[in-house]
Length: 107
Image 1 (cartoon, rainbow, N blue to C red):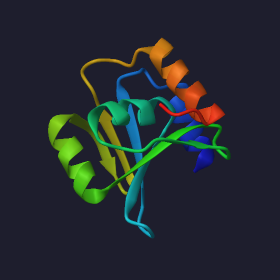
Image 2: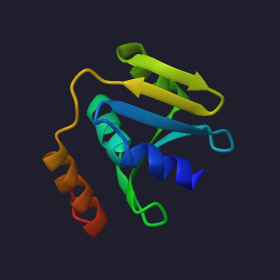
Image 3: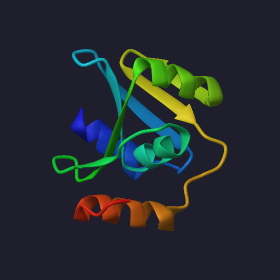
Image 4: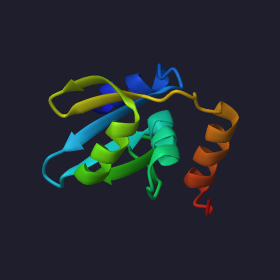
């Protein structure tokens, strides 16, 4: 799964939120650019995943439903969701956000 997540974020077009549902805890996780975009659409607490070497955010199913109503759902298969935002990510702002998370600075 880590390889799929990494590939999805490497090739993220800056307008796509890739979400992965973990049924054990009932939360959706987004990483990298997806996490950044999700943080712009929902109230989340970002963190930095050392194992994935990128930012991560999680949301519960209720918040996912609220976000999904606002955005376009591109794919909904099993434990994977793919949403599209209208305005793409500012990659300079993303890099600053990710660097702050990696260094443990407050946002």
